[in-house]
Image 1 (cartoon, helix red, strand yellow):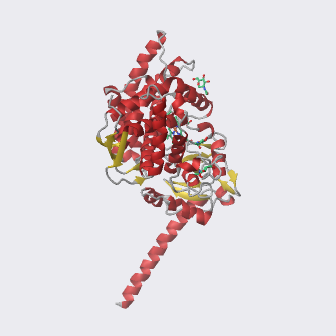
Image 2: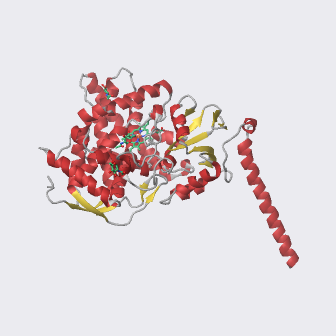
Image 3: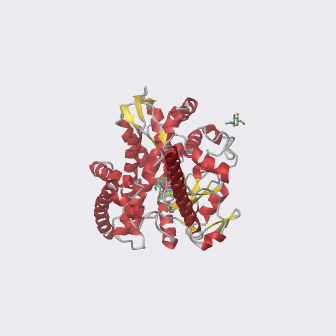
Length: 484
Ligand code: HEM
Ligand SMILES: *[C@@H]1O[C@H](CO)[C@@H](O)[C@H](O)[C@H]1NC(C)=O
Ligand SMILES: *[C@@H]1O[C@H](CO)[C@@H](O)[C@H](O)[C@H]1NC(C)=O
Ligand SMILES: *[C@@H]1O[C@H](CO)[C@@H](O)[C@H](O)[C@H]1NC(C)=O
């Protein structure tokens, strides 16, 4: 009896041992797959299990309110440049601002961006996010010139102000802030891109759109996922609806009619874009601004609610702006430019929330860095989040403290350290637009309403940064703010 047990134990041990060595050897296989890699000094790290690597650890960390330990532990063991294996590939993580800057500045030279095929299908092959080289340069500057600060000041702000007020007028009792913010953001983007005012058309496009977005976050085996198939179908519908508009506008444009919007700029230029190119381009802009801007609106309110002193100071700033104006309802550019504390709140929300926690790139050649080499073809992740939440760069880095931006007292060195919008040739073309939209939203919110959270709601960071319950709040119209 005893003997058998021992033997059983032994064979257990043997098979565990065998299994382990298969695991270990396949890890080494991945590591040393090419003889080239053997010569190279990789950044230190742990590749975890074969195939899944450390993906499960990463996901379970990012599904909590405090995902930081995943990176903290690895930085403590290996330093600010480490190797892991996530989402199907060995990946070098950079948690170092200098290296991040190096990665962003060498886009197209040493690194290029790469998305999985499932995402490319949803975006469309002519999307700005997938373009490279000269075409990317051209389209990036075109996008920038559609959303730069003089365009916002002279054209976009009026509609931003009007559509946000319009949305807030319908609020009463219980509101899911994230839902309202998404609606606002979508309506604004559709208006900016093709001059449509909110209505049934926009709302039914948005319904399809939500399905497309869901497709982006079906990570494993997208081809077998119903969410993904539904997303592809919805993408086709969205593209059809947009094609119709593009064709109509092209006709009008040939007849000499020009609207002052993004679509107008695309049709009027002498680039000769096809309808398909234009549609992909519009889809990508709708994707890039939608979740990001609406999440930042929601989280700014959440952080302010949890920091009453900051909320009080913000209210005072906006009451003062309102009191000084002859037309207190609407907000102009000079008003936007007189919100110093609001700008601190905006920066601090971007810093703490990290909507885009970092960017993936691929090494185009072997890249020597900090005494190591990133092998050609390897994936790299430049983590903004880890830098923004590092105590070496920001005092008390993990606390929401908008005052730190006032005299830069709590920012130890801002240069190149604060990159919520990325940098280099792929710097977010919507960076000013997002800031303006958030500021205008906060202005109308705090001057019209007071609110309390309707339920406790938690932040999570996977698959995207969001609150679990879409942040329900109970709102009450403030005395003196009529519902026009
Ligand atoms: C809080 C809101 C936003 C954040 C945090 C954000 C962040 C970012 C970041 C980090 C990138 C760089 C991605 C990379 O390097 O791979 C990016 C790219 C981009 N963003 Fe934004 N974004 C925001 C809002 C917007 C808005 C409102 C628009 C609409 C105009 C927009 C349009 C884009 C586009 C088109 C790109 C791709 C640029 C390229 O690849 O050349 N974003 N964004
Ligand atoms: C913004 O873009 C417009 C073209 O759309 C251009 O004329 C203007 O100079 C740009 N302004 C800034 C501040 O870059
Ligand atoms: C917010 O951050 C930007 C960098 O993205 C910086 O230029 C700006 O001065 C900051 N604003 C404040 C109020 O510190
Ligand atoms: C900023 O500077 C002023 C005056 O120097 C000081 O009173 C204030 O406390 C400082 N703010 C912070 C957040 O340190």
